[in-house]
Image 1 (tube, rainbow, N blue to C red):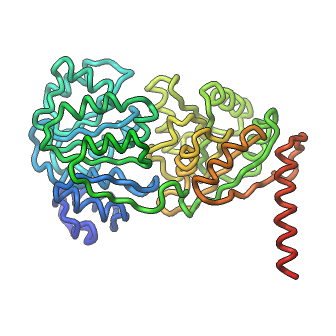
Image 2 (image 1 turned 135 degrees about the horizontal axis):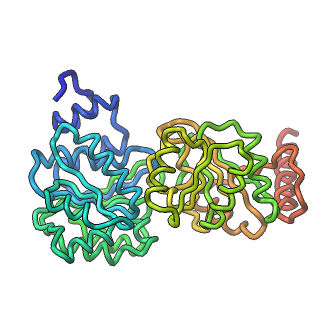
Image 3 (image 1 turned 45 degrees about the vertical axis):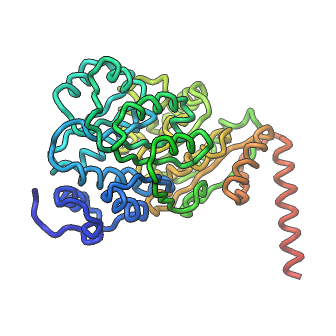
Length: 404
């Protein structure tokens, strides 16, 4: 293990020397608020419910203390459940990064690929398994995955697992783990189904909530652009031409829309662009995400598959081609920018039929989102522009009255 002073703020939390060495090598000096509050509780073997805004270091909040408490390599003692293979692979990267001086073995278990490589890894011995529910259940049913020695169970992105219909599978997995385990539970929202799962899975949990749930990061400037439905893609291309961005994510509602916009952007030959959704092969999805992280692609067009949890730093802009039908997804999408206290911009295009979704978002975040019209763009007539122009006129009138 390399020598040198440990980061004092992390050292005060009680983490092991081997984990502190990895933190030092990563260049981190101070824990985020969710880390500062959650890590000591995990080290005290408490069950924890954690919630914080995206980009605040949530994965490290459970990975660092778990790696510290497991000690030397042994057997399968920690299970982390994730809703998607992308998140599973990302969390494995974090465990490997922070645990590189511990000797602990970490693997990802997920569907969409062959069984044999994963089965062999489980049979050869592993300390930490990061898994999606379906594939893990397959290995549990054939006896490959034995959880009799499990000490730590992490349920991550639980609201996303609910959205994807995984909660019955998650319950089956929880029921197969020792009652003596420690359980760590991370979810942005707590609808009734998740509350009942938390009550079922956790023992006297301590809640750690950082920031206001469903409040976009204060470093994000976000705007709504009204437009006629049949001008949506035309306006998107015009916005891109007038926007100075380094790294931009475009979110669509459907896979077909993602493919259409990707194709249009490729045809302009102006941008380095990738596309990411569930019909793309696992290999191509990993290539797209890695290329976007490295700067090989400056734009990635994605469905909500990429909206939650994925660790993509340095995103300067997010554009929603349509308003998300689920208002909570809006916060997750625009949370891809403005991460780690850096500034970012988020734009959402909307037409008249999407006004109820806009209103739902504004109720959720408890604020009115500023409307914008793109200068120089030849707008077609649409009632949504009339409504927004009237709203601006009323606001201008109120301002004049105040000045008198």
